[in-house]
Image (tube, rainbow, N blue to C red; front, side, top):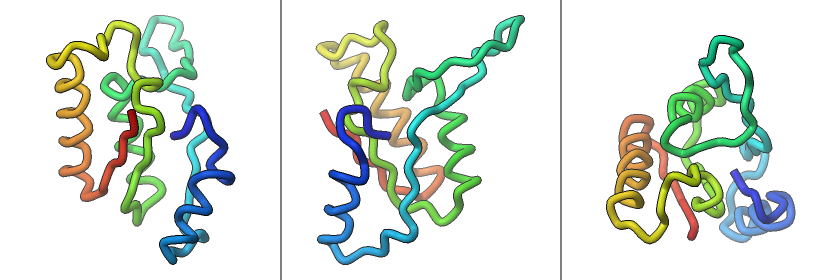
Amino acid sequence: MATENQPEEVLKPRILACGDDTDKLSYVRHALISTGGKDDSLQVFFDIVRHLPALRKAVAEIGDVRLAVIDPAISRVSDKVDPNSSTHVRHVMDALSDLARETGIAIVASA
């Protein structure tokens, strides 16, 4: 998930420079997440903590995922998370760590 740069312009050249196979590269541009409300409305914003089940599902559906990049991570947390609070940041990082351990993937979350 990249919000500030186009993946084709930034991530793909980096992957090529590392000698990896870009045929296995998948981009997630938008996420429609059910808010679970009475009207079952959809939400485009992806919140790392709140929507981890959807990310876990996407990893399973894509299959053979080894790396997830969230760039920048601060763009993928709700405004209720204070980036200056170690407790808040730790909660987000713990959730990502749990996902990485459960799925066996590496997660790169940039500042």
